[in-house]
Amino acid sequence: MNTNVKSRGAENFDLREILLKNRKLNLSARAKFFESFINKLKDNEEHQHFRIIDSPASREVKVWDEYSKVFRKMIMFGSNNYLDMANNSYVIEKTKKYLDIYGAGMAGPPVLNGYTKIHKELEQRIAAFKGSEDALIFSSGYSANLGIAQSILTQNDLLYCDEFCHASFTDGLKQNNINPIKFEHNNTHQLKDLLENKSNGFQDRFIAIEGVYSMNGDIAPMDEIIKLKNKYNGIVILDDAHGTGVLGKTGRGTCEEFNLEGKIDIIMGTFSKAFGMAGGFVASSNEIINYMRYFARSYMFSAAMPNSTIASLLACLDILENDNERINDLKINIKYAEQKLRSIGFDINANTPIIPISVPAYMNIRKMARDLQKMNIFVNSIEFPAVPVSKQCFRISLMSSHTKDDIDMLAEAFATLWHKYSLKDN
Ligand SMILES: Cc1ncc(COP(=O)(O)O)c(C=O)c1O
Image 1 (cartoon, rainbow, N blue to C red):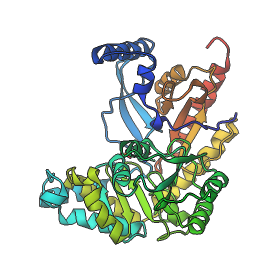
Image 2 (cartoon, helix red, strand yellow):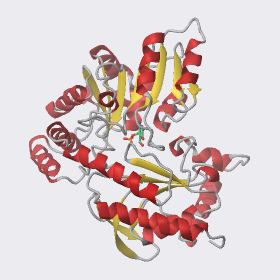
Image 3 (cartoon, protein in one colour):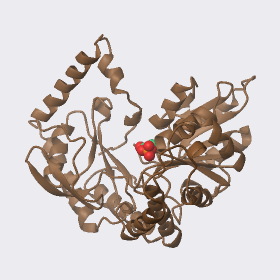
Image 4 (cartoon, rainbow, N blue to C red):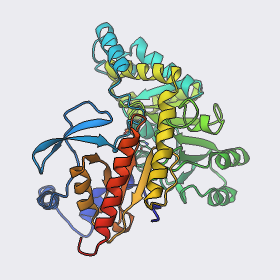
């Protein structure tokens, strides 16, 4: 089975575009139209989004099954909580301790209200973790990417952007009227040709990539990217949302994996993946970070992250800085899952915890997703209209705490469903 998922990331789709195509609907009509679409899915037990979880986010979660009206204990294969730190006891203890010292929140933006010592500590420690001089903490990865477009890029620059770059980045570009020159996913030959085309009258040339691509789970060809950066004097913007905590010997991310620490100009990341929390950051030189403090509007005009989250993130850093066990376990699980899925016929190469499994157009992905739920396996299905029917897939996300039995169960479920849904009458 070929499981290549070569579509634009589901994150880059805009449901409104699809809803409004060839239709002129006012808000009420739009909302009704969409509700009837969702209700039809629910009538067929084919709607699995916004599932209610009544337990901590961990390897096993207690999930409300709105169709069977029961709570299910499900194995979580649909979370970015790759290192299972979201519910870690040390993280919780440290968070409680800091809550007592600093209280829960800051209630305003750092530029006016100030921020706590632990906010500053997190900036400095995340900068060091990423091999940069300084860092800026945003309330989400989304706003970190918006902030880059708002402050770093201008219409006088040239931006070369991998076609699979995340919606948060491309939304920032749209918001700031920056027209990227897109290159095919991971195609550095095409990028080279584009860079070779001399364009005069522009200030800087930026190259925007992700370390680990969020939908495909594949890794940017950093060896080639760095050569092009050096040859063409480019400035690289690396979204390391899914690389941080995952790649490199100690989880420092894509730069550690490729021995490029300190060599990438602007690194963006999120705390919503391997850190298991929420928030985002940009790490770069002192100069660029100071500049961003005043020009990234999503930072300037937004409240500081709650103290409790900052405390949790510091605890996660303590763990990452002192112990590679989780990262090693995750790597073992990635290879075990690859081997299991290959043994049942899926043609996959897994180097990261994100494993997409393409679902052929003739198979009913929504019914398969419901079956997976009944088998107590929590996996995300990426369905039409988020992607074209031919590009639908399941996106498996692995965690360091998954056991071999969990992965065996996952593989068995997929084998059973592939057999069932290959039959014509399903
Ligand atoms: C590659 C990438 N960048 C940025 C983001 C945005 O991060 P957050 O969810 O923390 O806002 C995501 C989240 O899905 C992502 O996958």
